[in-house]
Length: 149
Image (cartoon, rainbow, N blue to C red):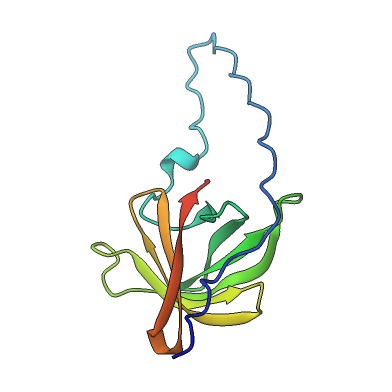
């Protein structure tokens, strides 16, 4: 049999430099009730893969977003932070998202232009196992991505 195809890699530009730190707000002197703070990364659903992920080889970032009832992932342009090429395509949720948070669809290998059957599965709150398979699952490869935000 032919050798297995290489694992799909997401090739994007290196990560952008970190933004400068945000200064702490001045203390409030009045007894007035402050408005509620906007939702932050700390309040997001950590059981969801929505957000930005750094690929295993640290060669790029992928932003996972809701697209209808499914998920889609886009390479992130390091200069503009805008979505680039779609690399995770039409990822449908698995049957039991509470017990086994998993999605399946297609993944694009931007180096070859080929797409493969793919699954993504949360491994804890900050790791995402991304797998691509060819020939009906006979040959598979994958990466573990790390949550950026």
